[in-house]
Length: 375
Image 1 (cartoon, rainbow, N blue to C red):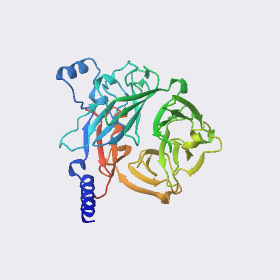
Image 2: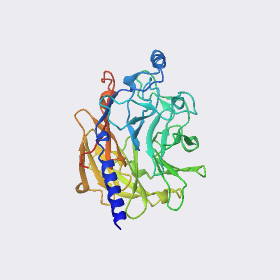
Image 3: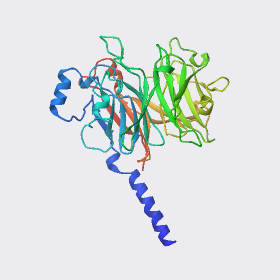
């Protein structure tokens, strides 16, 4: 009994120490795209050819696994040499350095076997990173229209080994006007077959794909979902796991007046008819930022810096919204993600509005912050 007690106390101390490691509790910050290069000559070649323009690089989406944060560097403008990168969460006392993930070869533009423009990321329960690649670059370039180099796809990487596991071609599930924006993955109860979900704002639909069976379909959402929209802008989507044991997709248009949910097992039947739940009227336009990988959803109102936490087991009402974070002046949060190693939530934020308006100088300032709380 004494030995068992000692082992238990030791395990608890290890957990507490790991969750409070001061080296991993500092703000991580960088400007533009400070990449780690194999050689200085390679960096010089990329700069001279226009393939590397640091101020054109900004991270908007992110996921955490282990001691690293994985970043979606969407190719909004020319000069983004890597569209998927990782950054260490360990404080170095200086600007962070980005490393292409899994390697430089996987980032080549115009090569459809490589990543073209990653717009969202999702880290699943098995340590697999799912990257949604729109295939479209230069979506914010003022001197040209967006260019589609490749069909849209979802690419899966093992975060334990860095190896490519699967590439899912979505070209058979989309239309010419499709705009794919968010991705999520789950393993339905009782099996290890991953199913991915992708929001398509332009088509008012959610794509469902059984990865093992290599089979997918498009579930069209009812018109009421887009009520209040003159143009279908952004279709936010979040996967939550409620206390009842079921998984749900919570979704809403930025322009939409209301927020909705549907059980994922209903989505997997291929039809949403009569199965969508209207969660209620939104107080204002809101931006879904992420979840705690459980039932909590984090969001902010459009243009606002405060982040709210809402437990999806409760009614969608303002009295159930808890302010948990406020970004610094000039910064807007674009992602909230769980850091399981430190047992904390982190926020990715940047001066993205300045980036859009070309007023960032050397580049957008990007930060990964810990939410307030004590170890």
